[in-house]
Image (cartoon, rainbow over all chains, first blue to last red; front, side, top):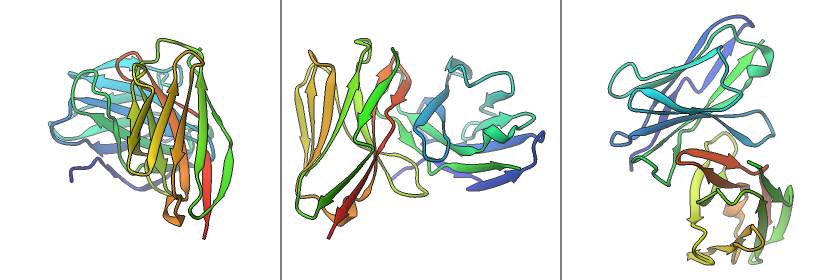
Length: 114
Length: 111
C-alpha cells in the first residue's frame, strides 16, 4: 500500500542552524501539507502546497519557514535559524486531488533544537 | 472560530466495552470531519470520516455520529480491544485543504 515517507526520523540541531525536512508524498497525489505537533499537544497545520506554490499557510508559518518541491517526488520543509520552540514532530501529508478529502500522513520527523 | 474541542483528554475502558470520544465545533464552514488514530512515535492514520450531510457512518467497530444542529460529532468504538489503545484526534476541514485538529484523547483499553 502506498505511503508517505519522511526523512530523517530524528534530527537534532543547534539553535540558529538551518534544517531541511524531507518527504516523499504518495506518487499520484497532488496536494501536499506540513503539520507540526509539539510534544503532548494537538497537530497544527503549517502549510499546504499545490501546483508548485503555497496555497494556504498558518500564522505559525512565518518567514523562517519555506517549502519546496525540488523534483517530481520530494517535498521539503526548510526552517532557517531554528529556535528552541521549533522542537516538535513535523508531519508531511498528501491528498490525491484538489480538495481531496483524505489526507494521508507520514511517520513524522522529530526535530530537537538544542 | 477555527477550533475543535475534544473530550475527554484521557479515557480508560475495559476490553469489550464501548469507547466514546466527543468533539464540538463552532464554525459551520467546516465541511468534512475525519478521525485519526495515532500510536506512539507514528503519524496520525485516517480512521474514519464523515460529511455534515450524513448523521452516522459505520465502518466495522468504528462509528461516527454527527449532530449538525448541535455542532457535535463523536467516535464510538464498539467491543474495544487492547490494540485500540492509542491517541485519537478528531479534525475538521477548513476550506479545501486545512485540517483543524482537536486536542486528542488518550485511550487505554484494559484487558
